Image 1 (cartoon, one colour):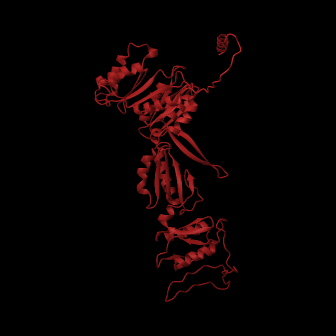
Image 2 (image 1 turned 120 degrees about the horizontal axis):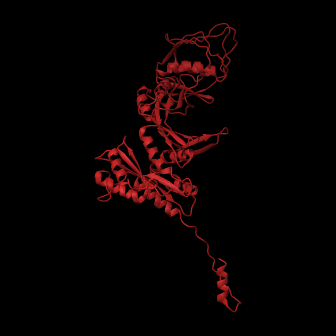
Image 3 (image 1 turned 180 degrees about the vertical axis):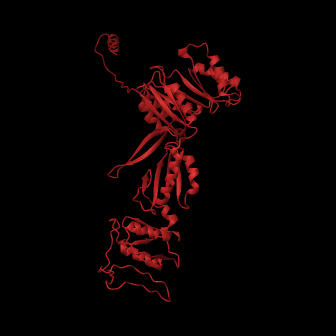
Length: 470
């Protein structure tokens, strides 16, 4: 049955025994109740309440908005609302006013499609919410629960999350996505706006420990080197892209956290900005990647953790060991002072000499595999392929690795596509190489055997002539 207002006097609902009465502001020129469209943005909801029970307030709002309310939570007994104003409000404004009053009772009213849902605050934070990239737009009401993604340029997402957590409300949430250096927040729109300003202020300043280094390349193209570095030190991240028709497509891309790399083809250089430890990793890999055409596979890389000597001292010992070797064959020794490690890039035979020397000058370096050799903590090498194209084998091997191996092993194709460059712990690299060797096998040839009768007087000569054709 439709509900009409009298044009001549305001409607009052009087409760028993002196209970409070809600008073609804009525336009005297209005002949009846006109339901508002929640999406039209017009200010056509006017109401006044004085100690009115929330049951009656919600019923009134449901009639005014034309949206039925589905109750997922009970309203506490004696819960009432007082709001007196002669102003008319849009649907979003009126909903915000109601939620500000409901919040003190642990309740929240939300709109989904053509319904209103009354639930607990805790439950409302677990429901599907609008997802916004970069922040909350100006049109979003302050009480709307939203999820926002905030990419960071300078600050580390994990550290920012630890700093912001005390500011999150009881039912809100904040999460760091380290692979993309991004922060995800689920909160009310008003709270997200405040937190976004704080996070942007933190992210504006460049970290004190951030540094920049320019790498000049001798033999390789900068863009090729950057793509290879992304595959070796990056993390594979899967993204779901939804097109305008709602079709979802899963794509995988390489992201490099805590470091940015910019190739410059004009000067044949790579500019790297980020944490010093990440730049050290880039330096050691560039020394392995930037080799003359056709020389890939001759050099390997080993990184050793040092215990009793510094990386600078270890570098002096190694440079003295390789002092008489010709320049074109001389190993590349990279002391990583920030983490007290040393990286050596050389041929396998020279790497064995380096291992032996480090085992002598620093007996505690790693768990020695023999009495005189130090155990490297990380190695990188090129696996040459004989029968299978590198791109094809790269697609196959990704499905054969365990989740742990996908996290700990980095690999990419060489520039000539005749091999794979792999980096990781010695045991993981060895397991990866064994897997590649089992895939890189010659294709089986189908053989057909037939028995043929020869009419020739000299069958041996006929067979010899046939064999000469192949």
